[in-house]
Length: 346
Image 1 (cartoon, rainbow, N blue to C red):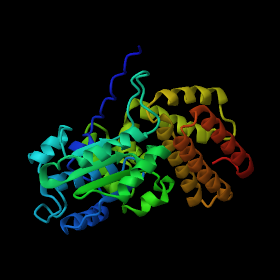
Image 2 (image 1 turned 90 degrees about the vertical axis):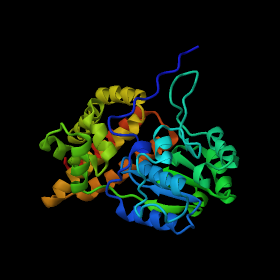
Image 3 (image 1 turned 120 degrees about the vertical axis):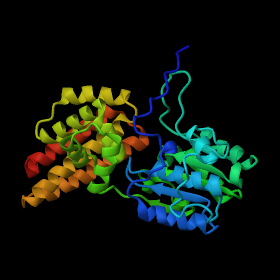
Image 4 (image 1 turned 30 degrees about the horizontal axis):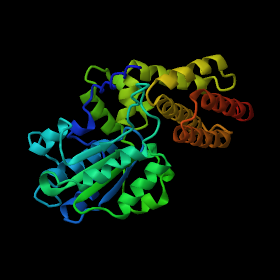
């Protein structure tokens, strides 16, 4: 029997359940605070935004307040909860009885993370919400991410939203909410998180990466698209390599190295969320070049803008259907090559 692989190592910056600071999402936080402190919070939240902008941190902040104070205005107006609060301490340890996190699990036979969040995981919510309520009288479920659900899981979740139990809250995190069932979206209040501005990114990276030079920090900000998560991934050796490969593909779009792309596809298959990470870097690399040419008044950018839209759709489809990375890379390279021949290189 194959041994189960070790659980992924957490990054150097704090896990969202232990992160008390939420960067640059004041508007969404204010909306959530009004709902919670009014005593009438929604039983379903859909927290959406690009990867790495704070969706999980927002969800845990809401959960921490609700489990510490309930749906009352007795806590801080910005939903802050002290680190030494019992609810915060239990949550930080991953041991709060009133909180359930649903994510893709690991296959015991292969030791690899499953490609989808299945119905068996979602059905855990029914038993959890049926238990005696935790401290503060509330129970909170977080689905990270709802994008990973297969059809059966999505339908099971929909039933939960249609008949929500009392004093229970369900928070769905999504990078691409348009791919969720319309009936799921309609039963949740939306919290939309935006990419962070450069000044906020600079402050965050000074805290999380104190040894990085100002020039390196500026480069991370330029490449990460307003995402702290992307910046932290990029700062790692693996992230730097993927970003370099993305930039190389855009730079050599007219004559892509197919053998190198096949090798990259093999690598992405082995890296957790490798295709998603590479796709994010590729979108940012192409977007940056288009912006630069636009400032110069270069012609032919309509074709490149259309190619960027197709690229985003191709990677979203590949992630949603869990397609093989090599084919996605080859299809993308062919599209970029054709665009470069028709519109000129960027």
